[in-house]
Image (cartoon, rainbow, N blue to C red; front, side):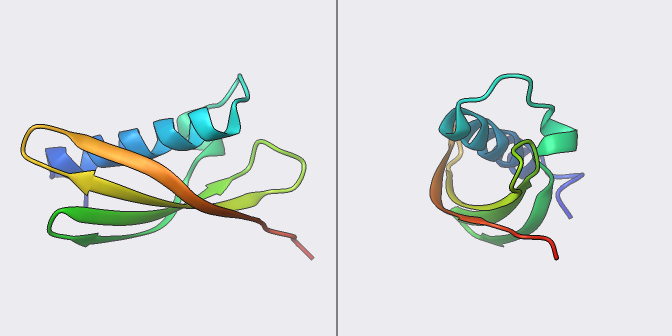
Length: 85
């Protein structure tokens, strides 16, 4: 998976940082509050879904990332509330 690939580890961190900045709340623990629910990797692009658990209503945060030899860039594309019944 991504444990042995420095590029994918970097893009995972970039994605979590993008979600953190998108949400704008302090006190976020990247491991506890921003677990990666799923990811797909296609050459220079990567899509991840983060299950954001810091707010009262958990959210599924959809992201896209661009991976190049010298950089990675991630951004939030969509978010939806995830009600637990």
